[in-house]
Image 1 (cartoon, helix red, strand yellow):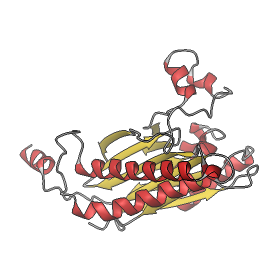
Image 2 (tube, one colour):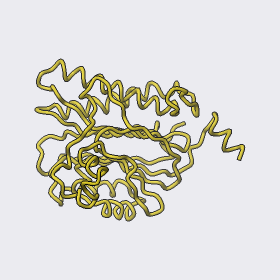
Image 3 (cartoon, helix red, strand yellow):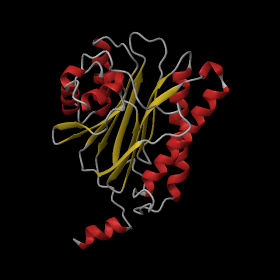
Length: 273
C-alpha cells in the first residue's frame, strides 16, 4: 500500500548557531511510511559520514526488502512482525557499513551515530532506536516520549541519582551509552504499537530536546497540528533562539487516514471479536 495519501511527513535539519558542520541526517519515504533520523559523532567529518551512511543504508535496505515481506506475519524467533525484522536487518547493515569504514579510514576511526527508525504499516508502527535521539507521540492533546535514551544521564535517572527535572541541568546530558557503528554488532530497542487517526509522531535529535522543553514542543504541535511544516520550523527556530548549540533535526508525521490491510493473524483476531 502507498501511504502517501494516508500519512503526512515533513522533516528539516539545521546546523544551529554554534557548530560549523551538520552531523545530523534525516530521510524518509512517504510511500513506504518510513522515517529515519541520525545524529552523528566523531572527529573531523566522522559524524557527518556516520549519520549519512546510516540513513542512506537503512532507507535503501528497507526499500528493497519490504516489498518481499508478508504483511501481518510474525517472526517465530524474535516474536516481532516481519516488518520489524526488516528494520532491524537494515540497522544491522548500517552498523556494519559504518564500522567497516571506521576501521578502513584513520580519519573516520571511532565515528558513530544515534539512530531512530519508524516504519508504518497496517495501522501499526515498528520503532527502533539506538542512542539519545528520540521519538514522541502526540495524541489527544497529550505528548509522551516513547523511546528511552541510551545515555549515562538516563541510567543515573533510573538509579535515582537525578529526577527528570534535575537532569535538565546535568553536565552528563550528551554522553550516550549505545551508538551505531562503534561495535561489530548492535541491538536496537524495538517496539510495535497500534496507531490512531490524528496521531502526530515527532522524531528529533538532542539539539532540540536539550534546548526546548517538552511542554513547549507539545504546545507547538497542538497549535500547528494542521501545518506540520510550520510546526517543525517553529521548533527549530526556538532551539536556535535558545542558543542553537548543536545541530537540530526534526521529522513530524501525522496519521490522516486508516491504512489497515491485514491479511494475517492480527486481521483474523480483530474480525473474530
